[in-house]
Image (cartoon, rainbow, N blue to C red; front, side):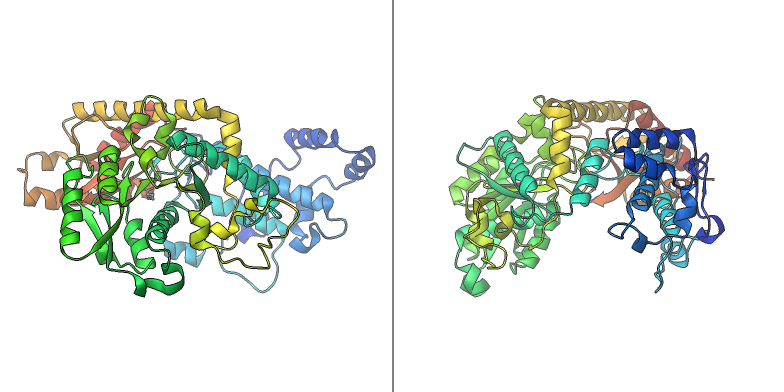
Length: 559
Ligand code: ABU
């Protein structure tokens, strides 16, 4: 049985979802909560509430969404339903942080498609009861991944921040749209304040800085390249690519694939993204960048932009931003910094020097949903020159962006975007910043760096592990191979690589099946599959690091 499932406060999936047994429906805890709610409400309402049936689940099994608010008299049922949802979530949160629970209860896609223990993803023509919806909510979490679990180490974005979660709940409740101040007055102003803070942290001047929160790092990178092209060729907006010379841009071979994707989307073409060689740590080599620029010019191509990376996805490398900035200045090129992963390091006084030169960038991608642990999604595109975003993307839709509104329409940010409707990603970040202060983020990030150093040192001493980079980690990425005993004696070379290539996927597969931990792996350049450890999960402790090493040895030693 899934350790996460044992001792569950709510029994789920019983009888094909037809009934739900709630051990807590009438527990003291619930009574206490009811009482505490009552103290905030009028006497009249209290009386009415006291007459409710004691077991609210009975209500829910015979009730439907149409009985909830705004239906007349839907107040009690709505409260009951949402409190049950909250209880399901609280139970899940508690399990998430319980190291003895599994990270996931893995099932194959075909099993989910076929349905599991009464959990059917199929949709029917008739409405399901509220009780069934609660079972479905529980099952959805049961068969998902606990990305806040201390041993979830698979992604750059991980962890479960309770304040961030509260922010997300509030955001969903408000269901606002960021395109105009009119619809999202508080959120649009909050965004302005947070963006300003980010410009200051980057080191831009008082009069510099423009930006947006976008749906992820790839879109932020797209914005950076789109704005770079517009700055150089504003006529593109009306006339399209036909007015352009053969433009090219540069990114390191360790840069994120979204740069190529942006080139494809923007009609530049992936062939016109020139990959610059990196050193052994995965940092762009400035001399190679300059060589590539000169070569492109000789070939009649027109360079317009360089994307430098601050915290590469796999190796966690920081390109030398000062050198890149010098080259961009010499060749009059737009400098975009993809700091989606590494941007958070700017908040650490001990480590921010690794991004020295970012203040010279024309645009920056920075994802608070990565190192800063803000719930997905939360990504900023920051443009140094004010007004460019709007000039590039503005369409002046008369039905949204009326110039003659009663307020300062500078806060109608929707015409800066490539979208129309825009999700509110700002509140959870704002609330977390309030809760932690800048110093709280700093402490959290410094702790990740310490954990990375610890992990590196432990692995270095073990002869069945080999580090991809034998140098103290510059970021929280630590990449390594595990060598089962049988491989240790095969000499380095093609034959050993063939075998080594299969080790990480096999260990990972076993880990998923058992649900004990999650860590990613990948090949990279000429290196066969290796594990990538990253620290961005506030729940992870040194003991989890030790556990992971033991677990890899346990699962891998017979391979
Ligand atoms: N570049 C998107 C995030 C990738 C990762 O979590 O590993």
